[in-house]
Length: 288
Image (cartoon, rainbow, N blue to C red; front, top):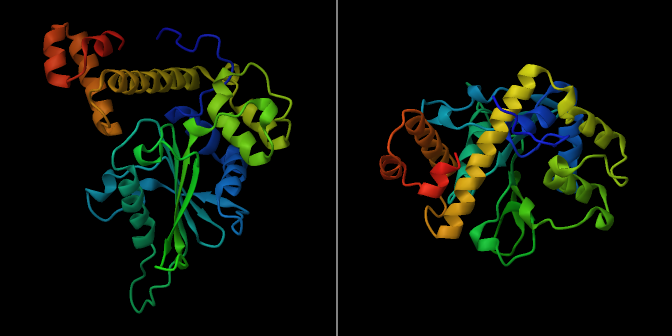
């Protein structure tokens, strides 16, 4: 595989491999804990987490098709679903609610059960902006169930979203630990050295874990594949918006069209045929 990493020193945390490398491994668990403690409601602080397998969620075959990036449980039994969403999805809010039902149902007990539930947090880290929030500068959304008076009616289910593209601050403008995390997620792969404002121990560990030169050959290959996939999706989405077509395709559909187009190109199918079967443009296909 050709080197597509170029001069990048640090991994892109918005790729599937990068996100799970930094936040989904036991040695780096404290990175996830520190990050979540910055975006959860003020009265909620995590002391420890246990990674859980996502394939145990869902009771039917359809349910099991729901795939989360990370699924964790806290020391008090609370559940955390964490997703990195690269491409815009029309019904991502609906999907968040749907996914949140799995760790709720998982808590069901056989026999005489009083229906007491532990809190569930569904967290979406988004590399896009919701259509209905484009004019709203707020990038951190904490959604709760409230009554007609605006009072929290049920406090055990929270949906949290971060619209990363809205974060525009430069290093010199960073004011707190929360903003430093957002800066890292937005700019890590563009940096060559650890910024002076990111000297805390947790960021020292993150930059060490993110250094591509320390990867094994297998890790580097996996990252290159993940980075290529990320760039393919971004290319399709960006050119779709510019040309006014394929607006808002779901992530899975975008990925499916990319894979189909690649396979047809490898079989030397005419580009007109690839366009017909994938609905991608000539420009998009040529860039794959």
